[in-house]
Image 1: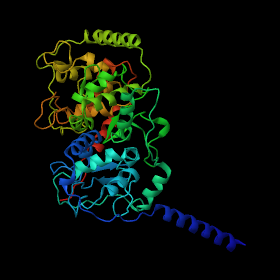
Image 2 (image 1 turned 120 degrees about the vertical axis):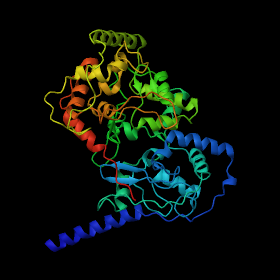
Image 3 (image 1 turned 90 degrees about the horizontal axis):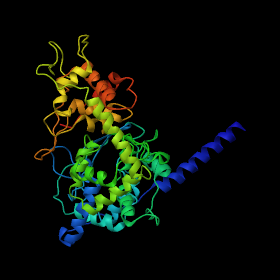
Image 4 (image 1 turned 60 degrees about the vertical axis):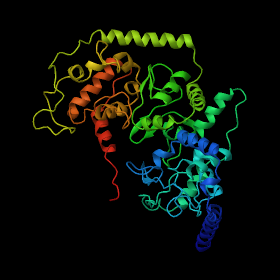
Length: 459
C-alpha cells in the first residue's frame, strides 16, 4: 500500500511537471534582418519618445559605455542581473530579432530563442503596451548604432538560475493584456495611466514587493526600493507633507524640481534626464495620473495645510541663527578615517553641525538660492518613514549630470564622521518635520553604506 501511494505521488508530480514544462516551453523564432532603411522616420521618432518614457537607456547602458549595449548591473534580492545588449548587432544584440520576437519579449518575457527572461526586465508592465507602440520602440532600437558586446551572465545562485523558475514566477504573477480605459476619467488621465503602468513601469520602484519579488497588487504605489533608495509612496500613503498637484508632478518630471517638494535625487535623476526627450503632452498625462493616486484633493484644504507647514517652518527658522565664521569645521577630527564610523564623544550637536555645514544655503537668511528650511520642511526625504534617502543625500550630495547645469549640493561622506552625520540627520528631522523622530539612524547609516558598495565589474 505504501509503495502504491508513493508511486501515485511520483506519477502525479511527474504529470504536473510535464504539463508545466509543456506550458513553459517556447519555440525559437527564426532570425531575421531588418534594414534600418525600412523604418519610417516618424515611427522611429515616436519610438525615441517611448524609449525615454520607458527609461530603456538606464538599465541597458553601462556607465561610460556605448548606449544600449548592456552591462548595467541591476541589483535584486536574488542576485545581480545585467542589462542586455539591445543594439542591432546581429551576434550580441538584437539585430537578428524580428518585430514578432521583440514583441514576445515585452509581452511574455521570452527571448528570441525561447528562453524565459528574469522579471528584473519589467515585462509585467511592458505586457500592457500596445503592438503599435512596441513596433515604434523596435524601429527606434533597430536604427541605433550596432555595438558588438557580449552579454554578461546573471549572477544568480542555484536553483534560481534555472530559467524554469522564471516561468513559474510568470504563472503566478504575470497578468497579460491591455489596460481598459476608464470611461469616468479624461483622455489625458487614461493616457497617463497607460504610460505609467506600461512602458513607464512606475510601480516597479514605487510599489512594495513580496518575498518572490513580485509587486504587491493590493499595495500598488505604496512605496518601494530602488538601488538602495526609498521610492516613496505615490498613493494616499505618500510622506509628502502637502499633496502633489498635477502641475507640480509635471515640473518635477520635466525639470527635476518642484518648489513645494524639492529636487530629484538618486535613481530619479537619470529618469528625469531621460524624460527630457519625452513630449510635453505625455509628461502632463503621466502627471495627471500620478497626482490622482493620492485621492481627490480639496484646493482650500491643501492651501490651509500648506500655510500651516510654512508657518511651522518659519517659526523654526526664526530660532536658527546664521552661522558664524569658524563655527564648525566639516573636516573629520585628527586620525579619523573619512566617511567611516569613529567614536567621537566630543562631536558637536546636530544643530551646531547644521550651522556650520548647511545653514549658509538652507537658512532663510542664506545668500544661495538653492533651498530654504521651508523647502526642507516640505521635503519628502525629511518626512519619509525612514532616513535612508536623506542619509544618501547627505553622504553623496546632489550633482547635475556631466555637462549639464543644475543645483549642486556637496556630499559630506568624507568630511563628517558617522556620529556627526547621524547627529545632523537627527537634527534636520526634528527641526524641520512634524513627523516622529527616526529610532535608529546609526543602524540605517550602516545599511546605506553597505548598499552603496559598487557592484563588482568584469575586467
